[in-house]
Length: 320
Image 1: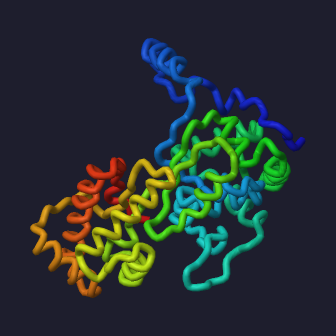
Image 2 (image 1 turned 90 degrees about the vertical axis):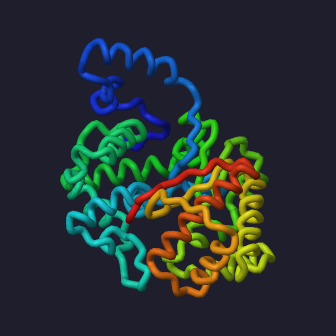
Image 3 (image 1 turned 45 degrees about the horizontal axis):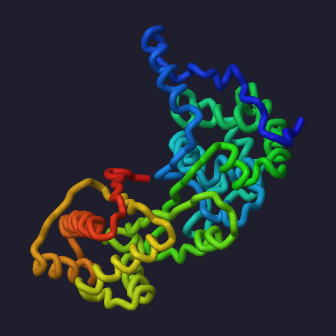
């Protein structure tokens, strides 16, 4: 049966104590702490959701394109165990043809679902399947089509639209993450839609901060076009960041986000920083110079945070 409203969560999969300690005394303390906050609204400072969902509020396309294709925690695990990205519908940069049949993608996912056993991803997926769709059995090759049909039908119903889920989950605010060159059109559309849900952007400047980022020099030029600053100079480059941060803040941003290979920082003199910038901007930095520049830019971003109030978030050492 296709649910036309959110079902009651499966008591087997969504048992209230499933993440609490086994020790009875510690479990009792955990229960009391949880009960004190369980009904408070959710404030999510770093959410992996697409602002377009809330702007357009259209039905999610299908289970595969909701739970598999866009989720790097899912497809990276499957890829590590020999499942080709192309077979999971993940777009290829070189134009290699990829699987486009969502049911075929879902079947591959279901067939390999056992690989997620014992992982946080499995815990989350089991919870989502049970709490949102009432699924009370383990996903597998045997039930893949039946589960797909159940979810696909539910996703077409109004309670499963992005804004409805936002409100059902009790979300007070959620932050998305956009690159420094993003026009933030979906956030602008949300702002004028009349919907009261709070979705804010976050400034993620990796594409114009990391010399190893693909297309870095072209990104610098684009940054200059967007801001009217001369990003061929150190002073103009920093001014461009300030303008983009102000633009993001005007669209609700409360933080910046930085995915650097390490948490290294540097505090060069203005003259040394300018010389390093010219090496980087010319596209010829040595690995140590590129790393030093990233470190200097973390310091510069922290300095700007003192001026504009954006909270600085760092994701050091993340490689995908």
